[in-house]
Image (cartoon, rainbow, N blue to C red):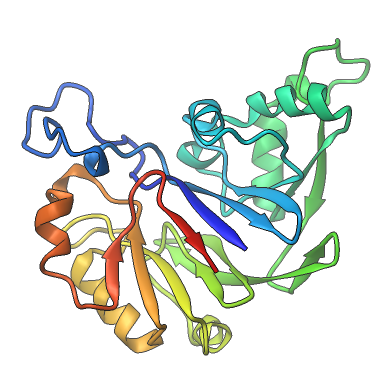
Length: 253
């Protein structure tokens, strides 16, 4: 399995429009963060987790020629706003795009992309084949995926475990049942928004404490805002088994 971090930023991305802080003005490519998403090349399948506003740009940058499924963590716009651009893959592959999400997520997609679900919709619109999932493990083309339920303040969000790779974004609470599902994971991806406490995301201190509790071989942090600081500065302060993810980072697992 190869994992590519398509984006590692929070909802505004980095740099933030109109901001002149040192992070937003940084020339380090690792401080340029599109909205959070990953691509998985797994057993011949090409999947993405979430399609944020930068989806088209991310697919072009990583030369993703085929897409077999989209898996959604939740329905916030910074994770769903690019879904219309799967129509390029509809055309290339001559197939409806399989979409996996919880009922609240799929219901929101039906609202935001109502035009794609109209009867006798004209050609050129995205063609979506919706598959409802919940906390139970499910499979795509015979590959098992274990959902990792977490809370984003009062909003349920799903992380996902693919083999020994576990991915959690937009969380500030991980229940005991999910911690059990995380046991033995070799690589953990976890959100770390900023230094200050936040109402719906782990801050850096909380993310590090959670990583220590889960105890994977390696933890990568993502969904970071400009308030976290410069990549080069923060990475020097992290434990040896923790790193900041960055856009374009690839892991061979």
